[in-house]
Image (cartoon, rainbow, N blue to C red):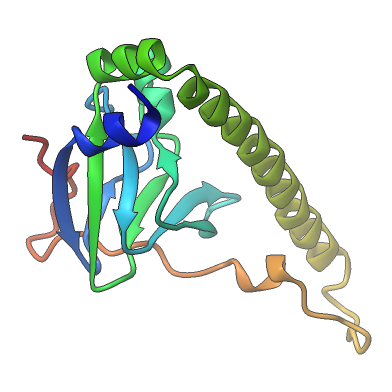
Amino acid sequence: MGLKESLAKLSMITIKRGELLFKEGVPSNGAMFFLFEGQLDIYKHIEGKHTRMRSILPGEFFGEMAIINNSPRSASIVVVSENAKLGIINRGTFVKMGQESPEFLFLLLKRVIERLYETDSKIRAIKKKDDDGEKITSKENTSEETSPEDASNEEEPSEGEDGSVSEAPIE
């Protein structure tokens, strides 16, 4: 069985714009996800600010740390499209997918390593920008250029209407 067949068998959830799938630091439910439709944004708490790290687009896996070591969520995920349709991958499903489709494990490992480099680079750029900003507090910076990192500081993702934050339900 190939990767496409494995993905077609996943349990699905749909969440709406503005909803948090999970929040940074909250214990995980041991599940990772595959995004079929929609767009999600990843936020991380860096230097006292909630910073948008990147978007998750259809065809991407995410949340794999919950499968590997059941650690608390390392970032917050919020839906930015009208709806998002996600496939749920628990530990048992993950193991089965790896056995049935070794390409799944290779693709996942490759993408995790790429994201690690991207995230590390972005965090370094944010910290450097903050350090540079502290050094220039009394000077005007007339030659400042805008980079993708400059646009990354955004407001904290919103919580539910009742103020609660919880992971999306898993069936």
